[in-house]
Image (tube, rainbow over all chains, first blue to last red; front, side, top):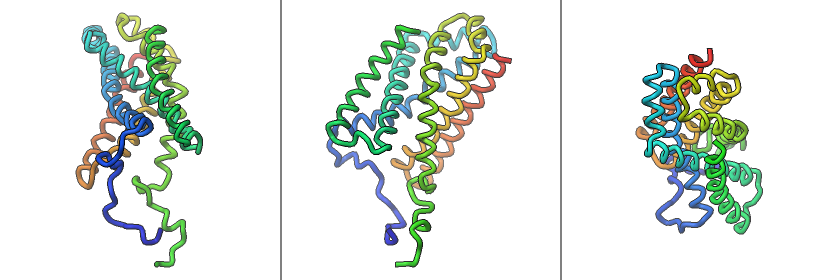
Length: 127
Length: 123
């Protein structure tokens, strides 16, 4: 501990020498969805600001976000947030010291993947 | 080997140089977001695509306005600190610092803009 290298420490994860596994990929996707949700945040704040500004501004923002491309982006964002939601819960479970056996961890990975799709479809039906 | 206590060696460690404070914040904000995000998805999903008058009516009610405000504040801070981990993993030195500043500016900027819009609609 006292002799820990104080200078340049290696960057992680070592993607180039790491064999892809369900557990690592599902964790990386959690990171990608988290970063990607910035786009959804931009669109939602734009929509809110437009609604607060004027009917014309609202018509424009609402039109873009509910266009074909807008619907695609928002549907993918919906999946991304459900994925991030479930994968985040999985991380909380891992952090508490549970579910770290390979078999359980892989089952949880599938639960996150399948669960995110199911919740996305359910949300689309409800809203 | 220097004569240091274990605590002294641990202080300022971790990729964030702040011990476990960053990790703990992510856990707390993840829990908070888990509570409010489903309601927000329902509220926003319903309001998206509605008429201007309907949208104003929805966000002038307490629950939609409060939940949206909370998701913005907690969500964007969760994003900022999550982004910090990403940047600490993949970038170094000045690039890292510049991107950390940009992601902080974006997070606070979006939060402030969204809160302004909510206040204008709700009040």
